[in-house]
Length: 79
Image (cartoon, rainbow, N blue to C red; front, side, top):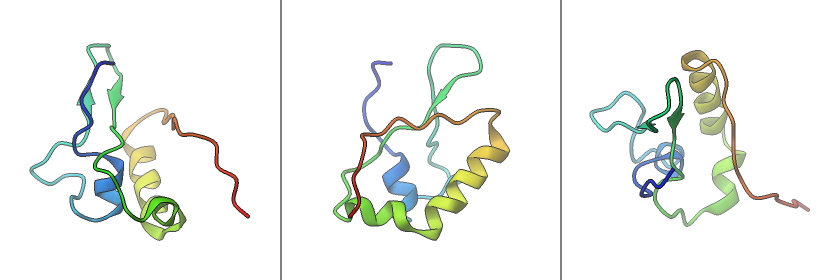
């Protein structure tokens, strides 16, 4: 989508920004009914973000706002 990586998922999970604040975290793509939620700032906690209550809350919020949520992420092996 040729978008720069600005405020996004890692910022919301790290609580440096919350959806609905003055900062818009969803990016228009130029395609009707398709929004992009960038990865966001580099996170130092890595997988710890994805093992949190914040992730569940974020996914619930996205589910309420959008008809479909597609997560594009690398595969991860957790031991």
